[in-house]
Length: 467
Image 1 (cartoon, rainbow, N blue to C red):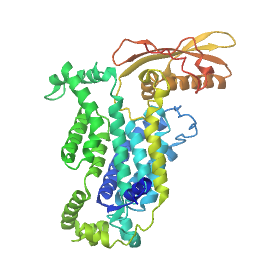
Image 2: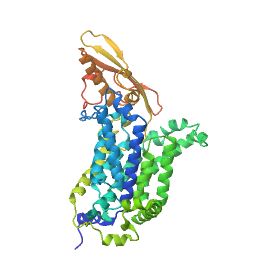
Image 3: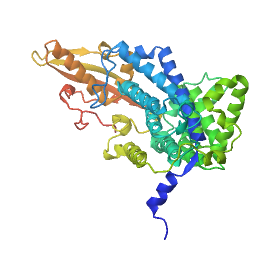
Image 4: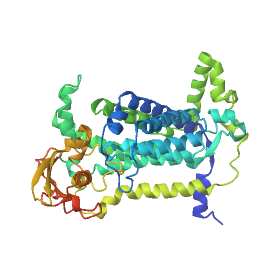
């Protein structure tokens, strides 16, 4: 009698595989997060984004997530840096992964202004790492707690990270299947025209044909790259494409460390044998340079053993199936597959209203500019006055505010509440205009609607819909 399908799936997900790809991922992810946290601190962005602003654009239901004070926010970043180092070294790995996930995600949720897809990606990968046994070998934990050491891990612990990367790329590609991106080559055309002074390639980049090539190549890359990375034969060429794609992104459109993160984490698609050879080269090099340190870090048991030898003598046995992580992963990936599709519940123009835009792997899809000014009407005297956003928000917050309807609504409520504390009840109206992908500016918010009276979950009829 054949094996039932669910049992077959469970058997394959829990099969023992070598730990090397997972260990490589852990080290590179942790190192990049340490670098990213230090970079954020060094550039003064903690002050700029979390201490300078007077008001913050909270996510719905998360209004309690605030920076509070200087000691609190700097403590969060210290925890973030130390826990990222713990992930890299495999030191108290579970606690380090949990602390990094909580501290990073907390900071990410303080203000919508700072939302970036790659911040969301970092949080998601940190959550997945909590579930994995990435510290069972090639880590300080495996040296400090040898009874838990193992050269094998369940297959799902590697496959989960691969699938999350695949979801990011695939949904980013599907999102590019729209008229502006493929037919008008926008916003790529707008961005490339600003690169005329780029060394050597500047004049080529401003050509219309280049914008179409980049747009179509970006769409095809995102949709198919994960499938190619899963293919053993095509993987080397696919990874070369990953490196070229993200290096171009880095030099043409500076978006922080995200390109380097993707170049690093996609190495997890390579086979365990490939990773083992890489670890042996690193081991040999480091042993020559500083043999005492490498023996502490990787353990001298790596020596001349083969993968098969390690699989036969793990100290930590995968003798039972732990359904806890598998259940959490099933829920996680159900959410990951459905949430990016939520905009289909509405017939609004997604790029105009941005209802369902965040947390959906929509990467570099639009160029939006705008103008915003608020009209305040005193309900007692009916007198009107103008309020500019710069009276309440930082320059960076204003750049995001003028093009995002839910933030405009929040800003109106913040202004109304401020006037209320001064003893005045006011109505707040927005004179707002926006441009999408280089099109003409058009009225954005309905200037006749009192935004301060609206609830967050009301229909978006206060937005002038895009024709």
